[in-house]
Each structure stands twice: as C-alpha cells, then as structure tokens.
View 1 (cartoon, rainbow, N blue to C red):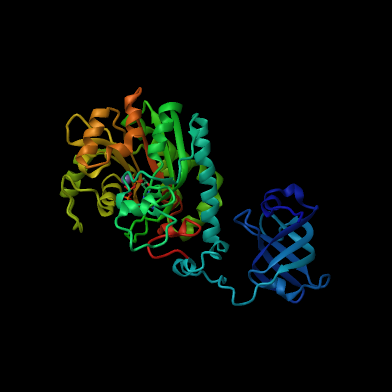
View 2 (view 1 turned 135 degrees about the vertical axis):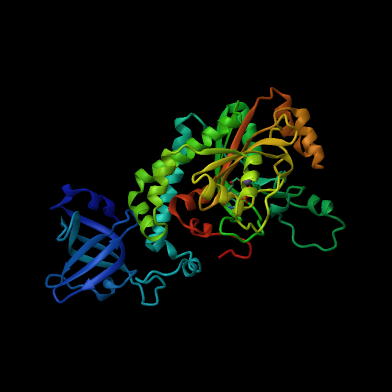
Length: 457
Ligand code: ATP
Ligand code: MN
C-alpha cells in the first residue's frame, strides 16, 4: 500500500497544502456533531497524527472511531489548528481492520504486570513502543560504535559443546527422546545428534578470543542462554550479549573501552530518541534524563575489590549477606557501592580468583585476577569483563584447580601456545543496558518475548 510515514508528515511543514495517504491504528478518537478527530499511530514516531473528519462531507464508518482499529486515510496536510505541527484533513477514511471493544489495550494505563500477560499486544502501548524504538536505536549505535573503531563483527555459534563457565546454567541441545534404559550419560549422548553432549552458548567469548587473536579487534552481538534458576528482575534465560574481545588489550584498556561504549550509547539514545526519553522521564523514572546527562559527562569511578569489601563492612546498612573478602558481591552490595558510595557507575577491579572464571589473568599477588564488573545505580552489574590469562602454564594450572577437562579446551589452549598475546574483553547485557537507559525496572519489559524459569509465553 503506497503511503507516507506519519513521522514524515509531522516533522515537515513543507508538506502543508499537499495530499497524503497514511495508514495506522486509532489510538484515541473524539466525536462531535460536525467533526470527528482520530489520533493515528503507525509506529514511526512517538507523537501521533491528528486526523480531522468533517462529518458533513464524509460518511465516517463508526468502526473507524474505535480504539485499536486500523485505517487508511487520504487527505490534505494542514497546519495544526491548535499548537505546532501538522494534521490531516481527511477526504477518505477506509477501515482496514476493526477492533472489537474487548481489545485488552484500553485508554487507561494498564499495569506492566498485566501487559506481561499479553506480550503480543503490549507493543501497542506508548511505553512498549518507546522501549522498542530505543532498543532498535541502541542496537544500531552498537554496530556504529565498533565500526567507527575498526572492530570486526563476528558471529559466534549458539550451539556449543564446551560448557565453559555455564556448567549448571547450560541448556541442553538434544534430539533424543527420553530413554530410561540408557546405562549412563555418555552412551546417551553418543547416540545423540552431535555424538556428544551439546548445549546453548552462555557466552561467545571463547570463540571471540579465536577471532581476536587473528583479526585483532572484534565484537559479537547475539543471544546468550542461561538456565538461571533465580527469578530476578535482572535475569532472562535468553538475552542479547555484546562481547568485544581485543588483542593487546590489558585491564585498563578494557575499562576504557567499556566506559567509552556506554557513554556513546547513552549519547546516541539521547540524540535519537528525545521524545521517548522525555516520556520515560515523566512516567517511568523521574530524573532519568538528568541521570543520563550526568553519566555521559562524568568520569566513572574505579575501585579495588578489597576496598569495596572494606567500604561494605564500614557501611551502616543491614545487608542480607554480610560482605567478607572472598565473597561474590550480591546485588545489594553492588547497588550500595554505586548508589550510596560513588553515586555514579563504578568499575570494581581485581576480584579474588576463586569467585571468577578460570580464564581471567592472574595477578602477581597470587590471590586476585584482573577482572572488572561495571556497576550502575538502579541495577548493579551491567558489564563483566577481564584481561585473559595469556600464559599457557598459568591457564592450565587454573583449569587443573577447577578439575576441568583439558582435552576439551585444546583449541583454547592453542591460542596461548601459538603466538600468545595479552588480550581482554567484556560482556554487556543488552537488556540490562536498556533497563538503565529507559528506567524500566523489570528486564522482562525490554525484550519482545521474555523467557525465564517457568515462563515461556
Ligand atoms: P549476574 O552476576 O548479574 O548474574 P554474571 O556475572 O553471571 O551476571 P556475566 O557472565 O559476567 O554475568 O555476563 C556479562 C553480562 O551479561 C552481565 O554483566 C549482564 O549485563 C549480562 N547478563 C548475564 N546474565 C544475564 C541474564 N541471565 N539475563 C540478562 N543479562 C545477563
Ligand atoms: Mn559478571
């Protein structure tokens, strides 16, 4: 159907006096004896287009007035009767699809809990339309950021045989039906599709390292899968993961890249989605725009893990889990540090090696690894990264300590045997970033169809 995007009509006063055809859904309508008003949205812009129907000239099908109905309107673009901008004086209104009154999206704002039960319709609300416009703009900005810096975009496999970090968190991939007579696990998988146990990747990092140790600077941007059994507002079973991996990059460089990326993305969203951000600022998180401006212009803090523990122990706050050197930081700890101590994003660095992955670079102190998590107010961890261990001997020692199967990691070890270089990278959870930039508090509300334990609507 030939038609003009509503955003084009709204932004361009030069169209006044011209004819246009628009298609869209009725978001609100008003009626009087002489005139009817329809507000149309076609998804291309946050503001809607007002359509004015002179009932003396046009026989308007009452179905076209109903909330949610889809219509095609032909008419003349005119200066808005009230305020700025343009509206459309209809000469023809055609009903494309009617919308009965049991339409679950009504004018009154529904709760996010209710909208989660109708994921196929919730995008028709202002909130979700805005979230997904921001999501698209941010995704494009990610590719732009890396392209401008000559990073190669690589696609890591989603089906993998290495169960790396994900031991308990890995979803199995199998085509074999249940067979209780199988003597043991190994023989079950031997007869399976790949002949070995396979699963969905929890991270593209290991393959990212393969690419980085040849191409230099690479990033992946794709889904990761984690069978997290914790039912939190920050975890999904399927999320999108941005993972740069860079040769010759040491921990300070990892931190610099992460900060630069986050600021770049915030700036892009502020520039390209001003109306969406204004909406989130008014209805979702008061002060959001000011927060983002502050982050964009601030220098992120850096804090040693050991110092973080000291700060937590000195805090006059009853944590559910007391902080002790050697413990993993809980969300309550992370949020205390970023929200109460630093009041801005903070990189915590040099964690105890026992609570981090085998591949992280071992520090000379023998106790910590060159890892960093970026913590942000309102969420906690948004990025996890590290310099990688480049010394094959040290890497093998860390693997032995964890009782890992060396043979399964031969390729990974080869990267250290043949021309090993210092390198590092990080993982940014795309949905966590979207929560941060929109103020949405539940990760299920920034993804089209959220998957989490016990829920696959
Ligand atoms: P957390 O401690 O918050 O569970 P993690 O330490 O397990 O995260 P990493 O393995 O470091 O996470 O993954 C890198 C990034 O991916 C995290 O900083 C986060 O932004 C994102 N992420 C991790 N797990 C999930 C998940 N289940 N759902 C959404 N995003 C996730
Ligand atoms: Mn992490």
